[in-house]
Image 1 (cartoon, rainbow, N blue to C red):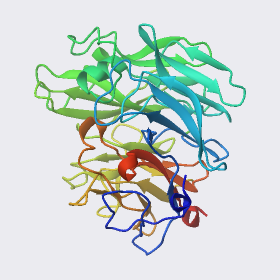
Image 2 (tube, rainbow, N blue to C red; image 1 turned 180 degrees about the vertical axis):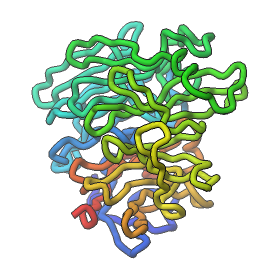
Image 3 (cartoon, rainbow, N blue to C red; image 1 turned 45 degrees about the horizontal axis):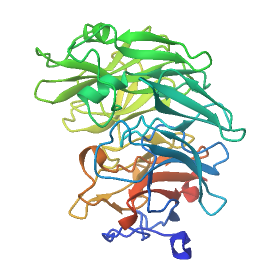
Image 4 (cartoon, rainbow, N blue to C red; image 1 turned 90 degrees about the horizontal axis):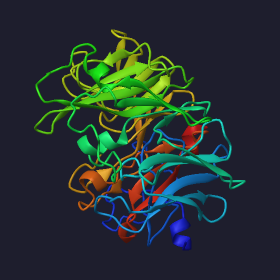
Length: 416
C-alpha cells in the first residue's frame, strides 16, 4: 500500500467520485484519523454491525474478499475469509472460504465470544449449510452441521433462523443454492428459530413460525401473508435474545414485530407489537435501543429505548439529532451511541456518527460517497463496527475504483 494511502485522513463534505482517501470533518470541527486497510483489485467488506470484527487485542480485523461486485451471488460463488493485521502494514491473512453468503450480512463471520483466537463463519457442505470454527493460532478447525446467526456471550450457544426461507422471502439476506422446502406454507411449524449447541453440534427448533403467527395480534393481518424470522441477537449476559418476526404481503411489502425470548425459546415477549421495528442493539440485559415509529406522538421513524417486557417503558433518544435509520451500537460505558446514515443528497454521502446521550450532541466521523451503481441488494452500507475497547470504528465504504473496502476510523480522542 502506498504511503499516501497510509496517511491519516479526514473526509470533506464534498467527497470526490473517486472516493479514495479524502478528508472528513465533524460537527465540532474535530478530525479523526482514517484510512482504508484493504485495497483492490479484489473487493473487501465485513457486513453487519452487531458481530465481533476485532479480536480482543484490537490488532486483527476480520473481513471477506471477493473478485466481483454489482450482482447477486450464486451458489458456487466463493468468497475468501481473512483478517487484516493492523500492526503489519495492514497485511491480509487468508483463513478460509465460503459459498454461503450475501452482500448485506456476509457469512456471519465473527470472533467467537469468549475466545481469544477462534473465528467462525457459515459455509455450504454437500446439500446443507454448516458453520466452520477455526483457531487462527493453531489452525485447528471443526465444523458444526448447522449455520449460525447470533452467538451467546459465552460462545457456547447460537440461535439461527432458516436461511433458505429468508432467501425465498427476502433475497439478499439468505443464502442461495437450496430452495425452501416449505415455501408454499405461509407459517410452517417445521421452520423458525433453531438453537445450536456449539460444543456438541446439536440443533433444536425452539420457536416455530406457526407458533409466532398465532401469538398476539398481527397488525394489518391479511390473507396470504408469509411469515419468517430474521435479525437475531443475544443480550449482553446471554439470558435472552431478540428476533424480528416479519411477514410479507402478496404485493411484496412487509411489516415487523420485535420479540425477545429465553435461549430455549420460552417466555416470548412482544416488545414492539405495532409492526414497525428495524435496526436495534441491546443497551444492557433489559433495555433495547431500536428504530420504530408511531410512538410517543412521533409518527416518523425514530430511535427509541424499550424495556424488555410487553408494555414496558419507552423513551425516544436523540430526536432530530441521532439518525433514525442507521445501524446502532453503544460505546463501552453506554454514554455514546455509534450510528450511520444511508446515502443522502445529490452527493449520496453516507455519514457514520457518534451521539452523546447526556449532551444531545452529534459528531460526524466522515462523509463517504456511494456511487449509484451500488444499489439494492449489493449496496454498501457502512455498518459501523467497534473495536472491543471502543477506540476504533471499522466501516465498509467505496474506495473509488477499488470498490468496496474496509476503512478504519480512530475515535480514540472520544473513547478515552
